[in-house]
Amino acid sequence: MRLILFGPPGAGKGTQAARILEHNPGVVHLSTGDMLRAAVAAGTELGKAADGYMKAGDLVPDDVVCGLIVERLASPDCEHGFLLDGFPRTLSQAESLQSELDRAKIDIDRVVVLEVADDLIVERITGRRMDPETKRIYHIKFSPAPEDVSSRLVQRADDTEDACRARLAKYHSETLPVLPFYEARNKVVRVDGVGDPAEVTSRVLSALAR
Image 1 (cartoon, rainbow, N blue to C red):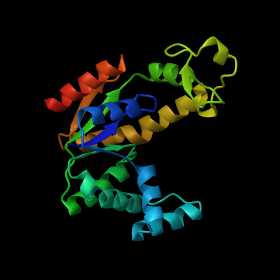
Image 2: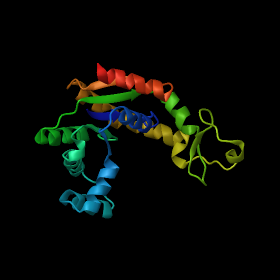
Image 3: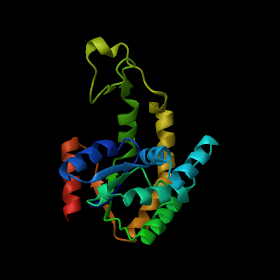
């Protein structure tokens, strides 16, 4: 099982990634941030290249990131499958990644898209509150804090409505255009991301089984 997990911020990708792995032992959850840090720590050639860009305060170029991803996918622990979360975010990244995957003879089985309406995303994100002492995240509607904790909760700067809608606008303008690229390859499965997390997981697994 070789998957890309796709969806807007606040769609529940992290929750569903963990649940998919529970049902598929041996599948490795991969994020570009973790891969970058690991490559830099290991001192690989690509890691050194990425480190140079990051130390200069520059974005790591797509070809370097894609090279790191394919390098990681060639590791023995990915033989039973992987779940790539948070990448690609743009069409150019998708094209660069596909070129590297083709060269390495690695194929993506499915691109799973969690679909959640913008207004519900805004409700999910703007309702989040953090306990500054424990760093635990609550939600004013879906997961209220105990009374003795609620008085000290804070809203993070990136959870405001303005910040949320800016991220959604970027998702629609830069990330959604990636989908036709994978639809042309018959890779995309769309899943309703609204409802209890267990129900969403059931939909994901059913979609993957088809």
